[in-house]
Image (tube, rainbow, N blue to C red; front, side, top):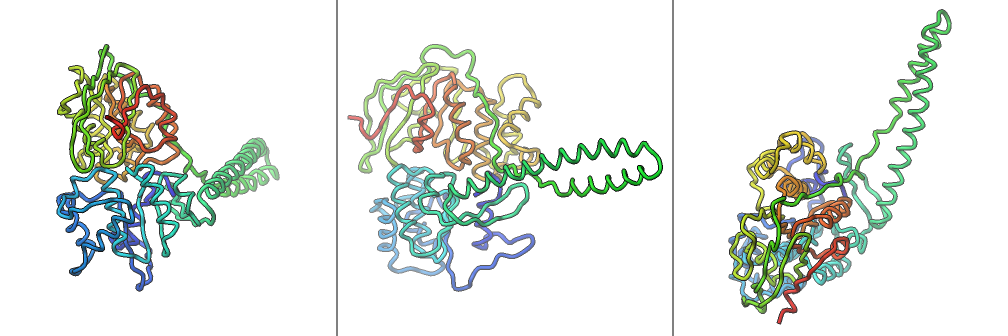
Length: 448
């Protein structure tokens, strides 16, 4: 548990040995095998076939690899018969299941899961909950999904982004969150009492220091006591810090029908087909796109953004803000500053850019870093900052809750609800969607 950028994924990389610590040490029992299911499939593995992808989990040739693949894919409820199929051909939700299967096929003593619910539909998440509860060995999970975590958690490792310490707590996830919040409040109250005492003593010290003789000695002792009280103050935790309330401005010159749908592509039983629909989106219209993993939601969104969706017409001149679930709209070689500056519309200049960035907890250090150096959660916050600066007329959001700290989600939901342009949303998190006034729903699974 920890704020975006606190180092959760980095800690996993230290445990697996992918990273070496700058100082200190990480000790793992030599007899314990470790496997990790990362957040995303590395780009250099997307062109591998399913069989090659799983073979890369082992350092030696595995002669019975196909039955092993079938077994782990069944365990995550992913049915694949053609193991020559390329990894990149699978949807985001299916790739999430491939990542989990990649770890499971190694049958590790220590299983590391990094945001395993990202892109999974409701059935996939329930399947994963059951699997983790029944797993006989050690599981360590990073996730922003509080309800998911609470269903199986025995303890929490808390990474404090400000003190750079890892603390261990026992109990389920919600209990630990309450304990940390209570501790934060106790520290604030302690600091308030100390600060009041310090201010009183400073006033007295100022009075005595103007006097002569013995009173000046008293003032000197009071100065020492004030220093002790200041040292006793606890550095207030800011882990509960959330992003600032924000608004995504709508493109000012956009009116009338922004998007029109007459047909949409979808994938059923491995085959692509077109289905007729009648959908019109104007300002303030919000379309929820639903359907199970692999039916073609992301494919449709990408086609709309690129202008290649045959049955979808977008009003000419419409600025489209696209939040992609894999953040591929962000150039990994760009600095955060350049990524924001490239999409900025308006005359606010650098002051506005930095103000928007600060609202999304993008610090001076982060804004000068390259995109590739950010955590997935930080990339998500950069993507939202880009939307604010871009002022789109149509906003396309593909799983915008993935990787995002749960504390930020109510703020994001409120901003999306108030957005005045047209919006297309894909999300498998119903409690998030319920905070947004959805005007139309397109369920790809139930189209006739």
